[in-house]
Every structure is written in C-alpha cells, then in structure tokens.
Length: 289
Ligand SMILES: Nc1ncnc2c1ncn2[C@@H]1O[C@H](COP(=O)(O)OP(=O)(O)O)[C@@H](O)[C@H]1O
Ligand SMILES: N[C@@H](CCOP(=O)(O)O)C(=O)O
Image 1 (cartoon, rainbow, N blue to C red):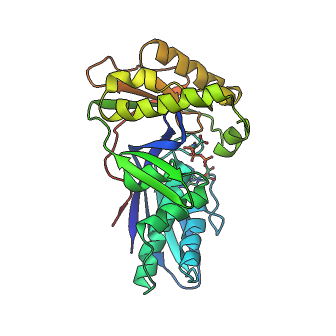
Image 2 (spheres, helix red, strand yellow; image 1 turned 30 degrees about the horizontal axis):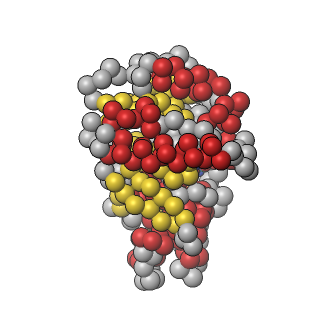
Image 3 (spheres, rainbow, N blue to C red; image 1 turned 45 degrees about the horizontal axis):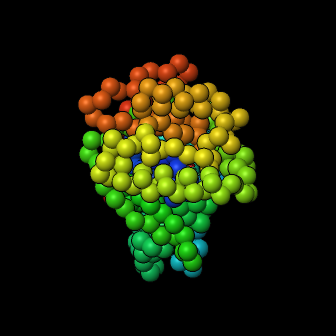
C-alpha cells in the first residue's frame, strides 16, 4: 500500500510571485490502496469537515490525472488522508494534495504494471493541476526552489542558509487562492516589475548565503498590496513585523504571514488573532513509502 508524506510550502516569499518557494516542516500523510469497484476517502485533521469524500476530492482528482496521463483507468481505491496543513491559508495545502495524488498515482501505476511517470512529468502534471509551479516545486523537491515555465514547468532546488528560521502566523479565517488571484491586475507599472526583479534576485542571495539581507530582499510591489483588502489584518501584521526588523511577507496568496529571521536574533513574538507556528525549513520534499 503506497504512502506519501508531503510538506507545507510558502510561495512568493515577497518578490518572487509564482516563482520562489520554501518547503516547511508541517506535513500531510496519505496512503492509498486498490479496492476494486469502490471509492472510499477517509480524512482526519485539517479540512476534514469540508472536503468532499468522492471523485471531487482534490487528491482523487490528482490520482485520476496521473492515471489519465499514463493512459490507464483509475481503479477503485481506499484513500486515507491525515492532514496537518491548514486549508486556504497560503501554506500550500492544495499543492500538497495534488503532489500527494500524483505521487500515489505513480506508485499505484507501477504496482499495476504501467510505465513510469518520471520526475519532470510529475512536476509538469502537478503544475498543470495547481495552476502555478511555485508551491508544487518545493513540495516535490524540498528546500528553496526557483520555478519557471517555458514549454513546460521547470524548477531548480537550492539549500536555504542554515541560520534562517521561519515563523508562520495563521489566522482563523481562510482566503481562497482563487479569490486572492482575482484581486491582481492584468498589467503592472514597469517600475514595479523592475523593483521586484531586483528584490527577487537579491532574495536568492539572502536566503542561501547572506541572511542579513532578508529584510531588503523580501520587499514586494506585485501582489501583496493588491490583496490587502481581502486580508487587512495580515497586511497590518506584515508591516508591524517588518518595522521590528523581521522579514515578514504574505505566505503564498495569504492570509498567513511568514516571518523569516536569523538564528540568534530576537524571535518574532505572538500576534493577536493569529496562531503562531515556528516551522523548520525542510531539506526533503515529498517522501513516498
Ligand atoms: N488535503 C486536501 N484534500 C482535499 N482537498 C484539499 C486539500 N488541501 C486543499 N484542498 C482543497 O484546496 C482548497 C484550498 O486551496 P487554496 O485556496 O489554493 O489554499 P492553500 O493556500 O491552502 O493551497 C481547499 O478548500 C480544498 O478545496
Ligand atoms: N503564487 C501563488 C501562490 C499561492 O500559494 P497558496 O499557498 O496560497 O496556494 C499566488 O500568490 O497566487
């Protein structure tokens, strides 16, 4: 019975919209077994009260996409999900679900004697399901990833500097990524694009070699301000943490706030209305058992 452990991720990291991402030490665990003629979906933990238990379940949809990519029919299944990544908060729960589904699908396809789905195909398929590559890349590869798309999805993985620490501030109410993306303009000023290009390049240096540059490197003009109306408390927390010296950003499409700091500097403290979660940066991506 294949199982998979998939990490939460934080995308964008300020200036790296749809490109940069970090794998975090908070994992969903899932297993699947072939059960001819039925579909059973068992869910505990985050989202258990909300997600469908049939073919609309996101992991089942990703499993079906993996089978379809291999030209095979999805067999009857029992899927068990133990969820720890909060849904609709900007910590990559949907990316973790599609990565889990595609990797479980890959294992089941191999068990059933179908051809291999290689790593490039898994990145491509998960990106297509998620709509952008910046969460699925660190979920698959771990560490700190730079993702891009040309004729297909691509990513490189880097090791974050060992002194970088992360604290997530998770609010009670979700904001869907779909809604947060709908707030973005189709066109941005050239000066803002240039500003973000410089900061995103600097962030690669800051996260891997020069963490003292993190505050300057996490400035953004392409998405956070446009999303502020949907998450005013998160925007206020980003501003307060940044003025105290922490490199705070909206995590993914929000509304979680991610504060990066350097080991040895004062840790960012509690914030009213948010669940404070110190999270490790993890080297490993999804692990199949
Ligand atoms: N583990 C999961 N199992 C089933 N569906 C999931 C899972 N994780 C996320 N989803 C679906 O994706 C939605 C959240 O996706 P999204 O708005 O992109 O937020 P996030 O930032 O958490 O990825 C959930 O409301 C749910 O429909
Ligand atoms: N680049 C995307 C990232 C969405 O991340 P999520 O964790 O909120 O799904 C965006 O900003 O829309």
